Image (tube, rainbow, N blue to C red; front, side, top):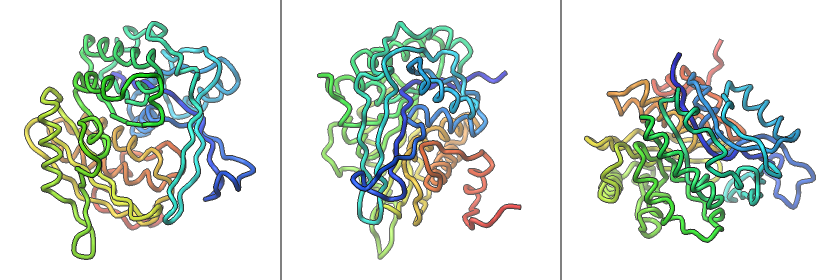
Length: 350
């Protein structure tokens, strides 16, 4: 049996306004589940991987419903723990045209935020695993969850797993008296594969906002700025020479419904810059970064010696996520490969 990929983080109840209504207009909300590391788990399972997801959920009807939903996507929950007062949640107001989306978190004191490292049987969880993935969101919620991230990294490395991290900086979550940089910089340096957006890498490196601009306006259109991509890689490499592979997914938002995506990756030998995708009818951009991460993990396993194919696979999967409502990227490997090969027609498949 294939070894598992383990992800660790908080699963959330997502409450979205219908259509593009504002919070003040909505008399009801559409409920679904999400959260960065849960999104990665579901995306990897959709791509055909064996996945174990570690989280903490309350022992009540909402927690049990959440487990039922995750199991529908073939997610293993053998090492998920139960307890705490409530499931964390977030409220989502959908963007439209020039109006940005808004997110309001309600996670303080949640079941996951009060998790401690000793609640999880890490040794058993990693005994039959090949990869461990965590993110900066898990470290942001409380000092105890940050400690759990560190324990998990140490245990995973000792067990010989590949460890990946999504920087996932959310300034509104760092409220327990510790600075993002002080907690994240040492842990990021212990990882084998690290993901981040342009502004997340800027923040962890202590650079001013706008230093990294991968996709630029050019000649009445858009283009990837290769020189700036190389600058990104050089600065990251200087700061983290010990990381084996790191990547930047680049997004240019023309308006809420029109995004462009590209990516750059460094594998210790070369800098690889992808094509870019022009998405002019965005359905839901939540989870686009998680879709990229999960597909890159999958791509690095499929193409261990061909990192260009790995990152192009990841970018294609991330592009497809923009067409799917909700947090989860419910696409198959064949669909991603089809887009990689240039099939962008959107025609009915019979």
